[in-house]
Every structure is written in C-alpha cells, then in structure tokens.
Amino acid sequence: MTTAQAQLGMSERTTLAIGEALAARSVGLRARLLFVGPAVVASIAYMDPGNIATNLQAGARYGYSLLWVVVAANLIAMLFQALSAKLGIVTQRNLAELVREQFPPSVVLLMWGISEIASMATDLAEFLGGAIGLSLLFHLPLMSGMVVTGIVTYGILLAEKRGFRPLELIIGALVAAIALSYVMELLIVPVEWTAAMRGALVPQLPDGGALTVAVGILGATVMPHAIFLHSGLMQGRASARTDGARRKLLKLSNLEVVIALSVAGLINMAMIVMASGAFHAGRPEVAEIETAYRALTPMLGAGAAVLFLVSLMASGVSSSVVGTMAGQMIMQGFVGTRLPLWLRRAVTMLPAFAVVACGVSATRALIYSQVVLSFALPVPMIAVAIFTCRRDIMGNFVNRRLVAASALAGAALILALNAVLVLQTFGVAVPGMTR
Image 1 (cartoon, helix red, strand yellow):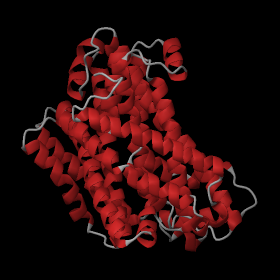
Image 2 (image 1 turned 90 degrees about the horizontal axis):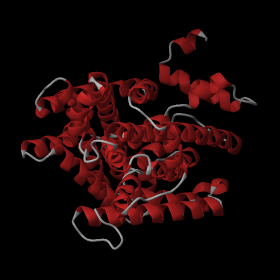
Image 3 (image 1 turned 180 degrees about the vertical axis):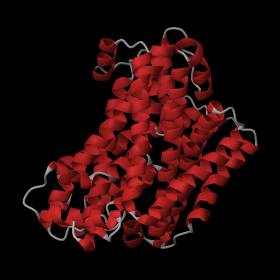
C-alpha cells in the first residue's frame, strides 16, 4: 500500500482496489472479498423479526414439512435482488431515481407515498423485534427496550458517515451473530435430519392451514425496501466504465447474491428446524415470540432461550439499520430530498412508540406491518422488472427472454400470495384455505 492509499479511508481504499480488480485479467480469491457487501446488507431483509415469527409458527405447527417453501421463496428473492443490483451497476442510478426519471409525476408521487409508508411499516416490525428481545432478556418494559434499540441503531447508522465499508462490516458481523446463534440452537435442539431433508426437497401441504402458513412465508419474504436498496448500494461503490468491466462486476455481484441469500435461506430453515425440534411434538400451539422464549427455558434450558433472544436482537437492530438506509435512499431518489439522519430515524421510530403506547400487542403489530408491506410490494417488483427489460435503459445488458419470463412469473406468484395474505388477515375467506 502506498502512502497516498494509506491516507484514504477504508471505503475509498475499497473502491480503488475494486477498480484495479476489474481492470485486471482475472480476480483472485482475496480480491473477490472486496465485492462482498451489498447483497449481505440486503439479505438482512430476509431474516428480520417478521421472518422469525412466521418460521416459528411453521415449525411448531407443521414440523419440517414447510422447509421447501423457504427454498422456493429464496430462489425468487435471488432473482429480484440480482435484477436490482444489475440495474444499479449498468445505469449507476438507483431504482427510485429511475422511477422519477421515467414515469409521469403523478405516478411518481403515488409510488413515493406508498414506498414511504412501506419504509415505516418495515421499521416498525424490525424495531419492535429488537425491543422485544431486549425487554425479555433483561426484564425491561417494552418501551425501555425500544429506547435502547433506537439508541443502538442510531449509533450504528453513524458509521455510514465514514463510507459504505464500515457499515457493511457491521451488518456482516450481525448476520454472523444470527447465523452462529442458530447453529448453536441446532446443537441443543433434537433434530431429525432425514425428515428435515425431505421437507426441504419434497413439496407437501399437510392440510389447508399449512397452505395458509406457506402463503405467509412466501408472501412476506420479498421485501420492497430490499429491492430499492440493492440498486442504490451498487452506486459509487465500483466504477465499471466499459461493458467488459460491467460484465465482470455483474458476475461477481450475482455470485454474492447467491451466497448471501443462500445463507439467509439456511438461517430461515434453521429457524423452522429449531421450532420443529423444540415445539412440534409437545407445544404445536406456540406461535408468538414471547411464548416461544418462555417455553424454551423449561424444555431445553436457559442457553437455548438466550440464544433465541440474541438472534432476535441482532435481527431487529441490523434490519432496523438497513430499513432506515432504504428509507433515506427512497426519499432521495423519488424527490431529491435527504433528511438528517436523526430526523429520519425519529420519523420511522414514532409509529412503533405510538403502537406500544396504545397498548397494541407487539406480535399483532408485526402481523399488520406485513400486510402494509404486501400492499407496497408491487411498486419495486414491477418497476425493476420493467426497467431491466428495456433496451433503452439497459443497452446490451437487457434481460434475456428466460430471465424476463422468470421475473414475470415470480412477481405474479408473490403478488398473488400477498393478496391472499391480506385477505386472510382481514378475515376474508379464501376458497381451499383454512386457518
């Protein structure tokens, strides 16, 4: 490293090294690590407290039989996150900015409003998750847990002032904490690995209620803010000025998406396996985070219960950080305005405090936040599919027919299942599906 390079910050050195790697004939293993970051940050959306609640219910009620749903959901998620990253790499603009440039003002205003509401709903669920974990582990009032979660989240967000790399490393460490917690859980919980493997590979729905839970897993997996965010995370991180450099960057980005979301998928599967091993045989009615924590201690010991809460807190804090980042990017992209960090954080925290102050159950608030996200999901899914299929925007990197067809099919499936989830949440009977 030269003296001039040593004087640069971590993020600037990373950008410089990425440029050198793209210009080289081949990229070595050590250089490949430079490209790791954006997909890891986006993957947090796939292991947030909402996922924990859904997977807990799936494992407790149906054992290993719905593991295949997580596999299917992750494949769809990989496609849309890869398309979002591709959009950012090729155009050097994020999804919200392209919406503002390409769509009529009235449509942009509507999409911005929906996306802002989705950002608040996302932060509500994630903020509550961290607060629940703190309140249970340290026997704090839920409101106190929320205050602590807010302070910790704000402190982590301040790392963004030093560039993208420190924040990527912090988020990566929190992902590792979640993963390690569930690895240790699986060493404590009795697991029937043959049945788990069969559940992951063989589609099965034991009854109509299982279909309802499967819809919950699939319909709440792809998060609108993660699709917006990934395109923006690729901006300014690496400058690919030629088609050859863009192809190399796309290849490495796709590899990171596959690895990061595979890890997220395995963590989700571990959540179901843990819930199945702990509750399916004796406590299949367990469906809430608080109930699960209190049941784990007498069944498997305090260690298992503490690990469960540690993973919940890491999930809540990291996903809250990422949700705030996405909210900033959405606002800046749609209207060209960026709020101060403390104000943005305060705005997204207010709904959570209001919900708790009104005495609403935290678990019920998590459920309704997922409904709001279901309404908002069409905005980024359809937009990213349209833009990546337009040659005037993507040039030589326009989607091939198979990719375009897969995006259309994936969007149709997720949107249909989200519609079912919304109807069921409001008590509307859906033929063939029972609670």
